[in-house]
Length: 159
Image (cartoon, rainbow, N blue to C red):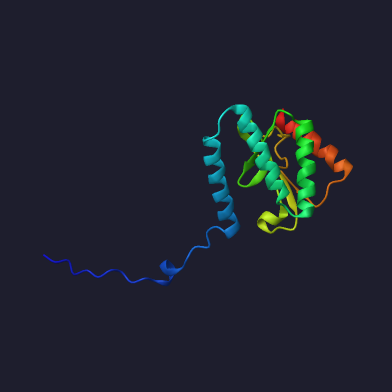
């Protein structure tokens, strides 16, 4: 017996396309996939750490002038204030991890076309104070006072 049913016609609701991810978000996901592949094929722990820091510094060097200056300062602040955090790329962003888990990261304004860069902290960061606390900070520049505050935050986050 032949099936004479016809396929359903498309309606306006099913013909619509999803907005989905933006080009920059898709790019970040592709960068993350590359980071994971590169991480899987590296050798010794010391060589891996050196390669990851070199990748972070290369990513910082690609940034626009204002973002690059802040990223370089943040890198120095993290290295000095929380030497136990290891630099690594995370979705194409400089980040700093403890035991392989990201604690904090820098997102340049250029990456997602925003008006300010961001210093963010993951749920691994030890910043819990009461029932409400900040997990990211907008950065338009860094004063000496800001650097001291960020150094304290990073040290606390890594503890």
